[in-house]
Length: 357
Image 1 (tube, rainbow, N blue to C red):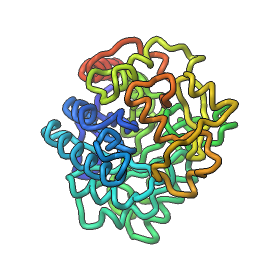
Image 2 (cartoon, rainbow, N blue to C red; image 1 turned 90 degrees about the horizontal axis):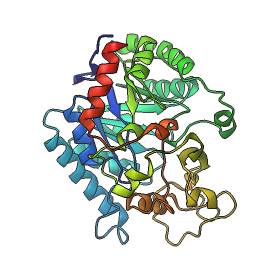
Image 3 (tube, rainbow, N blue to C red; image 1 turned 90 degrees about the vertical axis):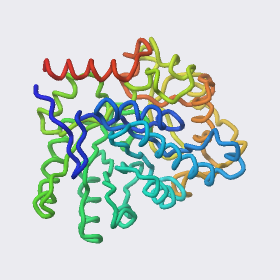
């Protein structure tokens, strides 16, 4: 197949590949810049991005805002003319402050999920920053596009469909995931049809990309043949030299089996998928004591009293190399990772497979 660029308004990525945002500390400036330099879109995760700042425990918001700006500026500098995006959860406390900080630092694209980013358009008004909601169903897509149209007289620049095979927080019922009741192919077809009316109304192309279980160039070709403009891939980039995670974290993903990847309960109230380790086994039958609250999530997304564990604490432990007690989110195909390679090697392999599709 012909490899077509991914066009998001005046942003043009040579390759139709977005590197998915991974927090805490897994996709920061180094990984994002490496992907952008190879022609894809590199994405920084805002989730507790300043976890390794000296004042993080004392002033997490201040540390995070500072780190966010620094990582965006560094990625933009290192990526030369590449495109850098930000992944930010709607469930995050101080959501607006993070978005404003990212805009000030020169971010190109904001991708937002873990809830519907209802107020995002007003935050980027009068800027060149492109915005993309993450949806997991036709219903979610209809809701957010209709709201943006009615309330702000605008629409999305990009739509990301996150399917059931993704890592991190998943926008599906646990029983549907366990019973394989969700088909990404069908959601894509439905969302493409829904997007058409807004393309017509606003006289613009709105690319739709898919995420979740995308691992090879053949996978990319399949979804582009169904009408997608590109894909988002996250887990595939964990086992790279440029990934911002601790070396222990990267090694923990290698040579796993399918049985060592399970759906887990997240304090955010959404199911997630993770590598099976001591933490995952523990939370099946008992809570992990929360020693400190970082006030990272909105109250309706985190019940401080009844949560099974603190997600910030466990993601930070993983990022710092404690792969037994930390939380290692991953996509369904994480078991296919066998060795650490460069981002360039992955991109070259994907391009070859796409061309051969």
